[in-house]
Image (cartoon, rainbow, N blue to C red):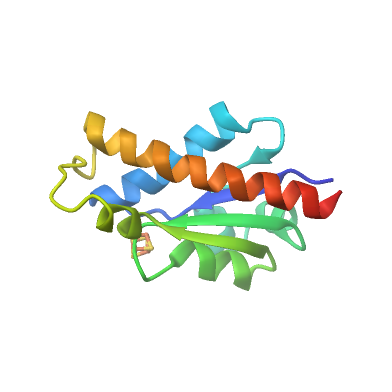
Amino acid sequence: MSKIKVLSCSGIGKVYGLMAREAVLEITNELKPGVTETVCLAHIVTGDAEAKEKIEGVSCITIDGCPMLCAAKNVELAGGIVKAKYRTVDEMKNHRGVNAGTGTALTEEGFNIVDELCAKVCVKIDEIIKEEK
Ligand code: SF4
């Protein structure tokens, strides 16, 4: 079985994009390194053959910053099977008024919100693995 691909959008300059990228790094490097990996969204958008080959027909999870869903849309366009889409802006709705940080650095609270999101994504990863067995 191919590793599940977990990709974030490239949102720069806003805390939502940074949260998405931190979540992907936490999942692929620390929480589920054996069964997941990430692919650079920019490579997919620019049509890099190797990046496209990695996601074509493969289960993917996307984490975007906002409703524009840049990662989800581009992964689907490139042939990835998006099994779940997350948006960090939605996570912030459960934490109104909390200072999660900026586009360049998360606060401790920001990292806590990322941890919560990662826990949800990990449940989904386990479901996908079960389905694909
Ligand atoms: S999903 Fe939103 S935050 Fe992420 S790259 Fe697209 S516009 Fe930027």
